[in-house]
Image 1 (tube, rainbow, N blue to C red):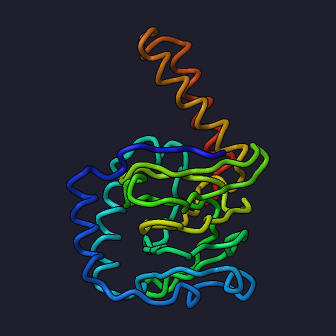
Image 2: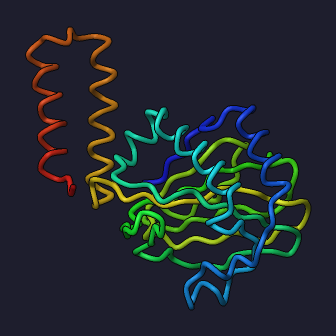
Length: 227
């Protein structure tokens, strides 16, 4: 499932991130691409071990932790430390599928990439092109969001970034290993959780119906989760 989550970062956080990244050293984005993806990738990235990447990455992880929509949609088990990319005029990223496994060097662990996320750091009026094009069972979606907003979608999706024709597009991207591997099961749990939240405004929490619905949610989560 594809979800747009608005205002993940506040305007002040976006401004701070942009100022910090302005002073950073960018490198060829192909350094972090697989063999196939490297042939269609033309962008810039901040080195993963750069202090600014760690600083702004921590800021983003804190924002995700306080965001109920992200946590309800992704049901995160592990989140790869956020990375940062930049597309200037003429840069693009052709159609590709993200690697299934990513390594977190400092933690010495690997994560399965169930969910891809792109957090936009540039206002859409500052650049032309640069749409994130995502293809999956829900059809083809073109995504270009306000600075501070984010799109999350299955990492199994074929996706691309269209060429920049004016300006520059900056964003953060990262992957999440969910407690629930299957995208369809994650959607069921999200819709059930949302339904329970709406029902709580109409039905007392201690009613049999609310207790039963909440029990169903947690029992499905218990049955489907991988910890």
